[in-house]
Image (cartoon, rainbow, N blue to C red):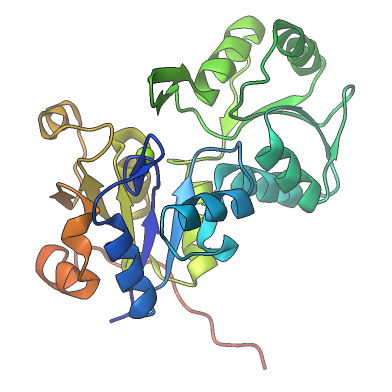
Length: 277
Ligand SMILES: [Mg+2]
């Protein structure tokens, strides 16, 4: 069976810096059985190596190739749209590094794009500068629109809150690349070389992970270890294909797929092209 997993991290693998019980067994089973997977995160603060290190310290034996961040998706999208462009950035190391690696220069005036990511470096001066650059013609790009992020002590404002501020002031709507945008959802699938019908999205947030998966025609697994409770599902017009209390239920991934996510639900509209001679 050809299959692979796109896996959210916060609320799925760990919560508040602590491993969710059984998540290591799920990931270790994927590694042991050579089932392709990639972690998909809307946090643009850290570079992929930093994220891999965090997971390693929680006992999950992965490397940078297993990490796909919205900062990477955003930088690749911009490089594709305008190679060797310029950006004014409200964000941190992960976003700056991804932009640099994709040929972008970080500038303070006359940028092609104002790019907004996660971070603790937002100041009124930086917002005011961004406003004047956007009104001057720079395109407003969001790494994601998550309004807030759960923390050990409660909730902190997310990238989406900063973006909403800039949208309100300028009257200009941002373009967002992170989950549930098809740009990031598709890029992650292609990173694993999977077809649509072979792709399974696992996440804890309906508005990003599950919505993104549903829109792409992937099979979706909602885990209840994060932001969503079972009773919340009544509020949504879309549903996940299956729900687990935690990914510990997926420690035998192939048996899980056979019993809980039978194939054939979606018609595949992706095709493998023959190799060029
Ligand atoms: Mg999450």
